[in-house]
Length: 570
Image (cartoon, rainbow, N blue to C red):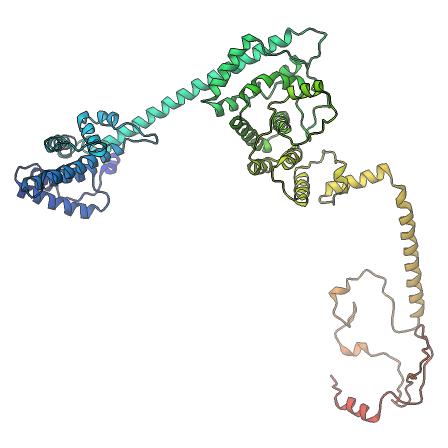
């Protein structure tokens, strides 16, 4: 194992050996400009070998040493030197701290403190970048401090060897540890937020159950009192919590025991699960008492962003349940989608209701005013989550779209959705009875319905069909009688004539002599009967019709000779 670990740490370098490395380090940190130039030339050669993988510390050292060489040459004025030193300082701080930056930007002072870089170096870099240029003496001082830091943290460590020899690998490990620490802190924060969300929702449920238990027995079970003052602080806390953790709050709401009730919760609210008036998988509808139970919370969280996110989460959960057999959870997820869509419906079928009825109806809605939903996204999400209630949800989406699809497209889409989501035990709708038959199940259902109910109007067409069959059989008998005694026979067998070529019958051999008849008589051309060119046609019926004669021939001698010359015998 040790041998494998040592092999993983090996990598290709641009210098020959440690002696060359040590010599270049001495040249760079020498006070002689000629030696520093030699060191810079060697680093240029190394960079050519490294291509784009030159170590950051080596590149920054070469930039700073080049500034010192130009400064000692006295060929540049002070302003040019300040710009030169400033560019090298900014490049150093950016490249060194770049590897510690994560997905979220962090202050350079904090990153520099982790690397033991003096804070006044970061301030100097800030002045060069955003403020008035610093004095030349501070640029020279900063260059010396940074070169000293690079010698201790990079050049000296390379000669020392051991696990801390690779400076970049060391700080890369520190970065990984920092990222792991941040991820751990984020997970802990998420766990605490999840626990707070559950505690708040459980407190809300407890207050609502207490309010329900305090109702008088004579009142309607579906009638709930207004939220008490003791519950107002719970709703305010949930509202404040949702501003930061809205997705987490909705995820907790969709867990069993909250918006997905258990059988104990339904029985405690007086909801009879055996009542089929509201429990219909094809058209889900929430029990009134259960809907009123959660209305205060949903009205408190009501906002455009919450409704959008709530619908997206509901459709995503319904898609996950498409391959499962949990009918209870599917029903209530679909029921909440249907309830939200009804609140946003464009229909106004309540023209004749009184003000009291309208007030009671509006009181039972999650939100009152119509909002702009993401219809295309909802349409795709609905089709991606097939279940028994998908046709109903798809109908609500298509009906309430601000820019609806063509009516023919809507009908075809609803038909395809109904075909795809239909099961053996699903009852056919009345509107679907007129649709074409696409599956065997629909064909069997239609036959059973016709047998059970019976259609008296079908007796007359059936009689007509029987009479036509009798006429057909009589015609076949007459044809068979006419062909008696001849070489031809009427075939009554079910033969696929398309499998036989033209002029060939089943059982016929490929020998041409089989087409010759046994008894035949010769007749000259001149003795053959011809048809008169008269204006009074004569009807001929059957093979035993009388022959017709004429004064002249249809064919002349020249025509017959031409036919004989063009005749080919096989």
